[in-house]
Amino acid sequence: MTEGPERRSLRVNAWSERSRRVRAGAFAAVALALVVAGCAEKTAAPVTRPASGARLTPEDQLRRDLQAIFTDSNVDHAFWSVSVQSLKHGGSLYSLNASRMQVPASNQKLITSAVAAERLGWDYRYSTKIYTTGPLSEGGDLDGDLIIVSNGDPTINPRHPDRWGAFDAWARQLYAKGIRRVGGNLIGDDNAFAEPGYGFGWAWDDLVTGYGAAVGALQYNENEIELMILPGEAAGNRAIISLSPPGGGVLLDHGVTTAAAGQPSRINVARIPGAAILRVSGQVAIDSPPVTEHAAVPNPTHFYLNALRATLERHRIFVGGSSLDVDDQRVKPDYSRATLVLEDQSPTLDAVIDVVQKWSSNVYSETLLRSLAPGGAEATAEAGLAVVNETLTKWGVKPELYVARDGSGLSRNDYIAPDALIALLTHVWGDDRLREKFQATLALSATNGLLAERMKDTPAAGRVWAKTGSMSNVRSLSGYVMTLDSEPLVFSIIVNGYHVPSSRIEAAMDEALVRLVKFPRELHEE
Image (cartoon, rainbow, N blue to C red; front, side):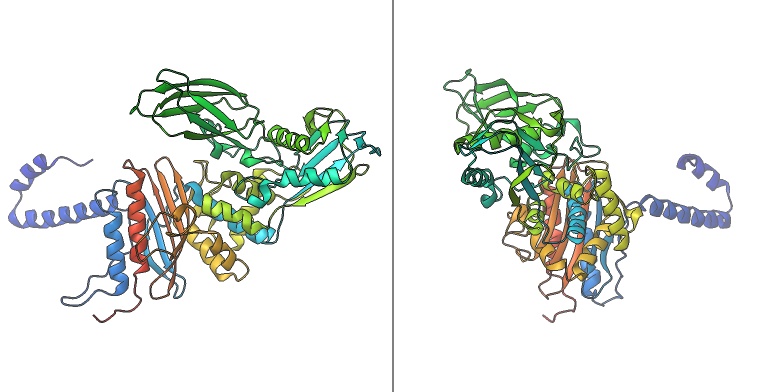
């Protein structure tokens, strides 16, 4: 760097008065340039300074107000990337580091959902087929296997009450067709998706959690189990742990004790990826309500088959053989010689994307990504991402503004600039085939999804449709705003690297959205 101010002062005192003034002016210019360069990382659209006595335009007042929110001392240490544009008039209303790529967390799902809607279509349904091999006797004995084949239906879980009973419905149909006993095996064909079903760059310690569950072509209960942990009868006793649904394929290593009343409850769940042992440790206070955790199952296909087998038995259909992944069969099924006895379809794509957007399901979004892969081979995330990149390029989303490595945003190797999301959301808004249903799948402020508790009792309630995103030290929110003057806006806010409670970051986001809702295109007379 340059010499220090003390030495510079000695030399300045020796110069002539004229030389001192000239050089001092030059130094001031250099200093100003350094300040500007130092601030270049955080640049916002300039706010026009009004002439003396003149009023700010609504646009300039909006920029000034938003800048004050994002540079407040509570949150200004974080790196904010923000873009806001008008969908009615076009043009930027506010921009702060808008072309700077950041880790988006679950705002990545906006890309996956929009491309899936475009390439698969809103009427797309997942299918599951059940085949039998061998003859069926008059007494109901099937001299062969029962084979289940699916292309990834993620909807057999409590989020869809009509689908949660799908296995029972299948069992009733099979019973009505005369099947009472299966002499062979119960086989699950999960080869529609390549294994393993994890995303690129997922942290190993996320893989034990419910939100880090692997995806597969056979999916049941979002490939996770629920742990309910209750205190024992007295302090010092082992806690009570229940797992549901059964058949998750985990071996519980119980290390949770009951703590004294008033003590904090602390639970840690750990499992080495690929292993069956689930270590649960910590404590739960004797006066504590039940503590709930969710853990990924080690093998989604086995979990699926275990649940289906138990359901068949409840409906008096018994399987004499084993429950097997099709890859464990020495001889692969010949479907041309098998009998199709049942075909099931999922709800349409909008019901799937609704869970992705409102509730941020990673399993659903990673399933969508693999479903985008061209047919003819086991679907991979990489093949799905190639379709994503191709589609975004056609939509005018600049490839230098994003890096997509998974479908859900769980990977910290994903990077997106707000301007990329603005381009995507603007395209969707302008496409009559996509707009209405896509907007309906987004969470609505103070109403539903992960925005149900945000912006309540404010003018923004019921006026912000957006996708949330969250992981450690990352928050994002992107979507649409309808102002009080009925002007539609599109926005994207991504924040990385903060060290305050996430609630402060979210509060700043919400304050900005309230301000956007109140934005008037014209000055209103008071």
